[in-house]
Length: 462
Image 1 (tube, rainbow, N blue to C red):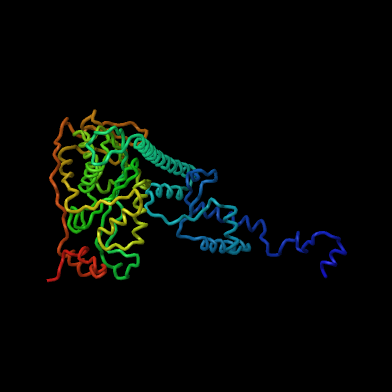
Image 2 (cartoon, rainbow, N blue to C red):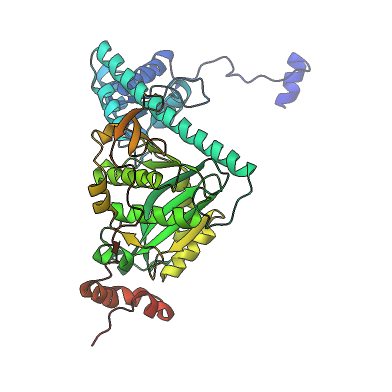
């Protein structure tokens, strides 16, 4: 009936709703929307951490991250309180979200993160606590310099990987082990680091009581050869560490012994090696790693070695990608023995390979005492990030603070020739009787019955 009436009155044309052109009584006004935008801007100025530049590939405004401890709904509550003070109608939560997303997309809630850069966090705090314009400019400039330095270090890492891959593609790969300095390889790139330890037993459906126990720990030390596209992960059981009951698993003797084993058995016989690692001054390993690399060059195992230590907090690299694949596979697997963990590592990706340390296949040596008595300590080692060792400069290391910085020669040994013989061998510490008893009584019941004698065989009740 209404359609016939409309056709008789207006002819054949579309019907128009009666509310078109009329503003609803509950619509937000311009002043109310403006107050929301001003409130969020003021809140970000007081609590936000501005970034020095927009993400790569974007021309948008630099993001401002708000603390993840305060979600948007709590910020909305603060906004409602502010509206009551100035006697302005407060918008509902959904409208608050919509205005924030449409008008201020660069202001975001930060995600919870781990392994963040301590220097970046300090710079953000300085920016947050700055009061005058000069203080804000100075803090932002320092933050920008730090980010640019980290980007230069990352660009160097990418360039080293690219050169290593081109080198490996141009020459036929020999089958390891290869005699040192015996091939036409000019350069091979290595990255090494420790992963977070895993434990056995571990089941995809983990029982609750095991959470409160201390299972058997397995350390993982990975060495990635980016050019060859392979990563070997050394699995160190508790009874195979230098110290007893899994102690001293991350010390310099362990790191250098595994590096030496990898160079002896899996290297390509390259003349020059480029190594990347994270900077770990707190564990005091840098001095001894530098001494070991200088020893390799002086006895002719390499013609030249470059060691690059990444900036703490900006150390993500290819070896971490291999660890991520291992952890992804490990979470979905049932592991009762060390061999099960090795199978998980090998199945996690094509590039990952497991090397179990057992029965003396990887020998530990007393590198720490040998290097301490053979080479002088490098003064100011914490400020340097790049080291170059060359056979043309025996006993000398070239140090630089930045990628493009000047190389400072430092003499660590006055001897043209040093001993080729390796240091005193160290036997693994094994497990104490207390630890054996604990594994037998508390951990053994959680292992599947057919693997109990393999995982906890050391202690037997009398």
